[in-house]
Length: 375
Length: 169
Image (cartoon, rainbow over all chains, first blue to last red; front, side, top):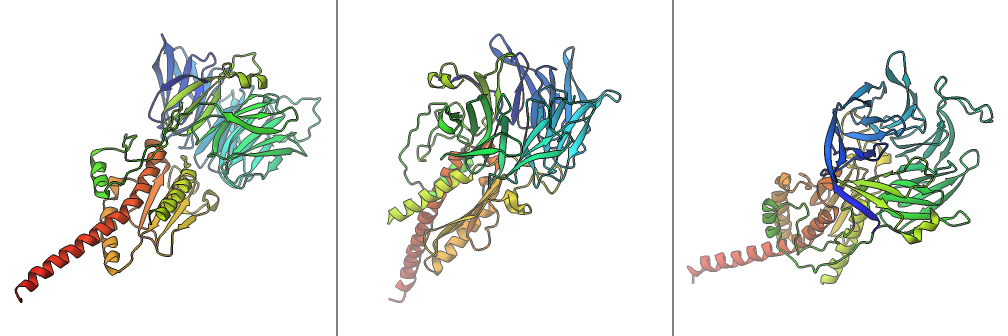
């Protein structure tokens, strides 16, 4: 079994992030709080509750080097939390958004973070020492619809975004005073908000985008059950579309240069691999599921209505219904996949997934022998 | 007789499995609001193509999806006037108690007999498979229920008429 541990934290989890040493997990249990749990003596204990937002927290990211948590919410606000003694103290972020914030990610150097929003804009925030707050520079008028996902390139300058208009765009987010201009780089696109590339591959909404560890390949998913791999981001990119026959994905993760794990509405992580020529394809599902079908028998509607008042339909074990029982780790859509990487590793062998069923599952790839060749 | 129904229901079930991929999505038009986009229809990029599955002219099912909500409208077979009245009354009875069902819509969409509105919150609280099972079971049972009602109306009418006319014999 690839799933190493399963833990039910809440009824539903929106997003989660791990502390730098992987001992603590911060997640949003589908409300306006962020809960931090720590593994003490083999049991998960709730140690902190971060309460500052008014609406659901849509994005959480924990910086591995700086040990700071950034949270964004549907109430158009964002806070950066730093740990002082035993408490988490929020720092204000001036986002200047007039719609909900949908996603957030720390840049590789953790001096900036990017926020995608429903206002069709992307905010890139950096810290202003004089006023002790985080200010933002906004990329406006480039997106036609909500920005669902942001991903930083390893060079800390390029930012890729996906949107519900189906397009993927790459911008330069060079900020004077924060970023150091590489003298050797010949790129003249060092203006903030300069659009390097726009890809119109998907005719449906695009989500879940990530860069490969080297920054050469970009992967994102479309709601039309396809995953797109883009090589050579720049003036002449080459893209591969991989269509699969299952339900759409929500998020992806690069395990190595040649392996990608996608998670989504199938409740089962999907493994995509690239062969030696660089052609990507779907390999298999990560979890083994047992499926069983039960015989259907007609029942009276009035009986059903009676049952309704008496019994809830939250997973009732009614033998009258035909349902495909999920034997896998997750029971509902998986929304988030986060790597558990030890510093110094170039490939990821452990990662965690969280979903609408409220579970966080940690997966280990070392036990999957057919995948070791791609690591 | 049962086979075409089975095919119709399987088709609807498969479409619902693909359509019920919903996620929480805040409103783009109004800040701090979260509305079912399929009802609002203000942002066309958030809506998917509606699918109509017709069994024949009298029976069809319209499935409209958006990013955070799904609307299923059913038109039930009504062969004669009596079935027409029975269907209307019965479905109105159910629609008025829509809170108990949670996924039912209080008014059916124009041109249909009954509508369901499923939002991302329903998918978070309840299992997707169970929701689909419920809808498909509902469609099966509706036909049975209406024919039973019709039968009982006819039986009762015959009994009452017999009793009444006995006095003239």
